[in-house]
Image (cartoon, rainbow, N blue to C red; front, side):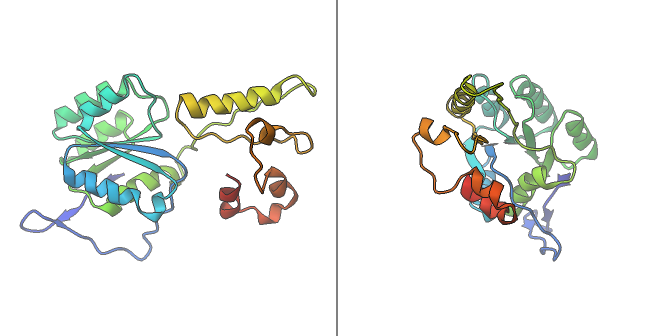
Length: 235
């Protein structure tokens, strides 16, 4: 999807009237890092991060644009979403080629640029860009772009499921599962969830020294209570 802000005769952005059916579904628990070139874009992303629809997302902002993004991920894993601001067709395409060399598979990229050109948009899509937003951007433009990455019917699911199963009791399946989740959170700086399905003899609470008031048994034995709010409380 290509997005743009209307401008009036003096070149300033004109705020479009909100549509009655313009519903934006909230984003899931994802990490978002934005690399901006202008303070105006950084301010828009900052305000978007405070929007209720991005309440679960972890939004981080840095200046420096495409070059800063490439440098940042040479030795660090990429987040779920990268928002990068770039100016000029050649700068955008060349920067994306460099970013692709350090970007992890599955990361969604949103580009903010000032060129309103269909051929550029098609080239960006061909290179795997998830969305292209025409600057200057507003808060709602950023919120809509990020949220639509995960709410669209064709959007890929977020995260992975790793199942650890033991052939019998006492073989160490729980120990492996707990340490894998711990390593993902500590070494990759990513959110991880341990769902211990051993309702009778699970040791997740003991291993993590936690005594939560609710557990997965509440969801198993009361399936009629399971909704988004209930799952959030479990997490």
